[in-house]
Picture 1 (cartoon, one colour):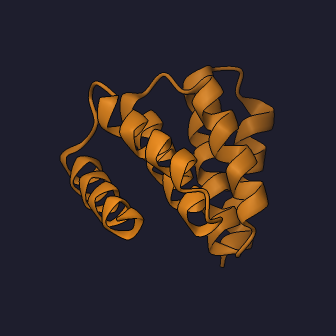
Picture 2: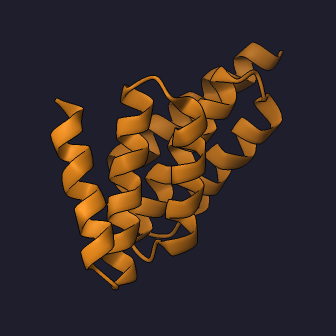
Length: 112
C-alpha cells in the first residue's frame, strides 16, 4: 500500500525543482518510512523536509514527528527541543498545536 505512494513521491522529487513540492515529497516519504517501521530513514527525511520546507504546517508537523521519534529513541532532551520548535512555528495548524502540546505535557510528566 505504501509502495505506490512512495513511488509517486519519488517521481515528484525527480520532476520538480520547486522547494515547496520537494518538501512535501520528503515529508510524505518520511511519513511512509515511519509507517514502514524505518525510524532511521524517517529521521533523515524529516530533517531534509525541514531544510527545504517553506510551508509552516509542514515545518510544524516535521518538528512534531521528529520529537516523537526522539522520544521513542529515549532522547527526551532532543524530543523536547523538537516539540518546542513545532509550537514556535508561526502558522502551526490547530491540530498540530493540540497534539504537540499533549506530547510535550506527556513528555514532561515522564521526566518527573
